[in-house]
Amino acid sequence: MTERQISQAVIRRLPRYYRYLGELLENGVERISSNDLSKKMKVTASQIRQDLNNFGGFGQQGYGYNVKYLYTEIGKILGLDKTHNIVIIGAGNLGQALANYAAFERSGFLLKGIFDINPTLKGMTIRDVPIRMMEELPEFVQNNDIEIAALTIPKTKAVEVAELLVDNGVRAIWNFAHTDLNLPKNVIVENVHLSESLMRLSYNVNRYNYFNAKE
Amino acid sequence: MTERQISQAVIRRLPRYYRYLGELLENGVERISSNDLSKKMKVTASQIRQDLNNFGGFGQQGYGYNVKYLYTEIGKILGLDKTHNIVIIGAGNLGQALANYAAFERSGFLLKGIFDINPTLKGMTIRDVPIRMMEELPEFVQNNDIEIAALTIPKTKAVEVAELLVDNGVRAIWNFAHTDLNLPKNVIVENVHLSESLMRLSYNVNRYNYFNAKE
DNA sequence: TAGATTGTTAATCGATTAACAATC
DNA sequence: TAGATTGTTAATCGATTAACAATC
Image (cartoon, rainbow over all chains, first blue to last red; front, top):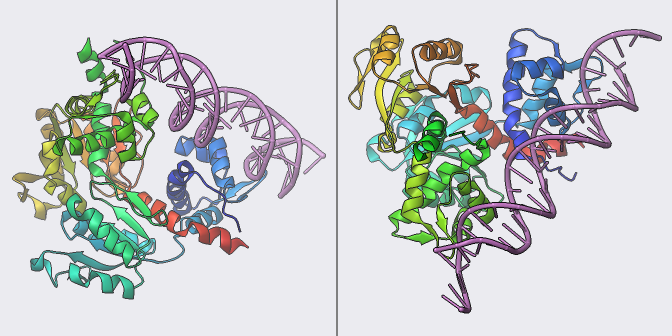
């Protein structure tokens, strides 16, 4: 089938729909209309219907959407019905925090390995996953069907390590390093630049000041 | 002065400009044209000029932009020329990782306190900042001119704690909890929903599969 | 001065919202 | 059937890109 091109704006919103539907499900809500959901989520009902219809007609006129069905379908769209093997590169504070975050497993992201260059970490385990040395990385990635790598290492090494990962078959990089990775188009890069997030926050706190200071 | 309304799309890009300009500065580059910068950053030169001109005419015809000047100005726009007192609520893995991340201090974000409900953490320090109990929070926030709070606690408590923070004068919440905070409009909320980020990555890895499975 | 490059207006493109016919 | 609500088309809005006069 020829793939329709879904805009990244829509994809940004999908996990949030998924979260709200999950909560409705937990609360035993069986059906919901785009209008009711729009009030909860503070987006327009029109946007909800447009977004969902990119993927199919999940609702029913006069009824709305079945919460459980829609939740499941969005889960499938997001690939959460499958498992994804993941490694973490960099066992510093952030890498360890991610490794300890057990909730990812529930969504099908299975932590298979943690890697670092620091020999004092060798053999240490986090949630039963041992920290390995970087020398083992290429073979490990090849032999364990690793799809996703979380990159929590300093930017100086990030580009080089990302290329190594891709060369050994990793298809997606969850990039926490403060740098852009210029990888082939078929490799997915999802950036989490915490410092940039904090700067946006700072901008919004400060926005009046700058203009006022100019007068 | 009446504040011009700058779109969030522009603000999203500012920290990235700042990062590239910082690198140019480190490399001793003195001036750069929008065209050269556009090639490095993979955005259009037109967008760069439009974005910057929201804030002022920082360039010079026939010359381009002075790297150091532009870097400094964007820093001011982002509020990085001032210090911001910050507290972290939740001394779990992620909270500790953020606390240990010293690079924020260089951008003017000063960690003043870490709070948790777990009494076994009481008195522990991270980078000389003691972990305090939640009971002390209101008074501490009021007396220490705390502007920003990073919220790294489970979603069940997040809404309630966010309101407590705002009631005691916090102006911005860096929200890592997996929930939306519905706070007054004058409070800045910057969300970092890691699980949603990972789902977007997963979508992009999987995007072909869903459509193909339907045939 | 001639060349380069900005600042800014105009054109295009894409995303959001509104409207409503289809239909459960 | 009548009422509700979707799916989808059309209208609007906003963001991006192109073009070029202004000017260093």
